[in-house]
Length: 198
Length: 140
Image 1 (tube, helix red, strand yellow):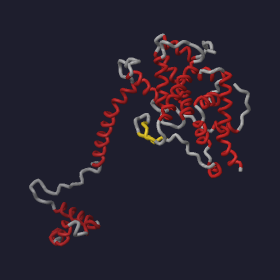
Image 2 (tube, one colour):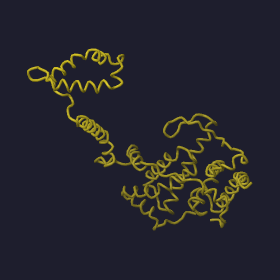
Image 3 (tube, chains in turn cyan, purple):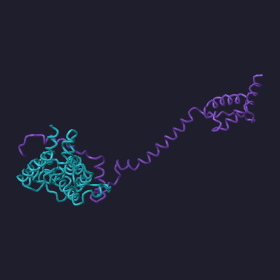
């Protein structure tokens, strides 16, 4: 299932140069992929204060992986995998904490976090429905692997093979995951859509 | 990739914003790599760090410059304090007249009229006959 190395992928070339001791190549990787990493984490974690922290951690992990990196597929797929695993751990840490408890934010600040998404009645709220917020709430309700599959497919244009690579599943399983993610999100948002059309 | 047609769900997904890369992200990443011993600290301070170190000094220098310029501008109209005592200690009549005229301007201020606030001016107002006598004698 592992893709052959894309020798024409600039990310792979930079990573190989970095392995050979070229520190500037790492700077090039950060410059090229930082927006992508921020984007993935924002969609996986939602509007939390952890995006920057996790983005930094993603590149630190990449730096640490210098010696054992072997070019298989695109570098972006490698970064997706790191970012996804970090986001997954972060989400699971949040879920382990009791709802409404005080938690420490990335800067050590205290934050009240609730695990339950506040839902407003679609009929009452439809006129002022902020679709960005609704979709983010809907994404947060999805199981993590469904959310990730949908994010990777919709926002980053990954194909089923690449989604499977990142999530560690077959392309067929990725397709099934993606289908369920779309149906679940559609079911979550449908009342708002209906209310908007009334 | 599934062969799907774009529907309202895709439009809804498009509404979710991305997050721009935060300002200073790269320099903070470099600092962390150095702090964790993954990367060696640069031998010479890079321009960004040098600038950060010098910024307080530059700010202080700018503040001193501003105060100095402000002081000079405050004195731009020259020294308004007129020397009214001659080298032999006598007060020139012309200076006394100037002083009297200035006193008239000052007494026109509402503050100067308020005896409770400015008892010194109030006292002058009650005892100004000597100045008028002097003016009269000068005209004679």
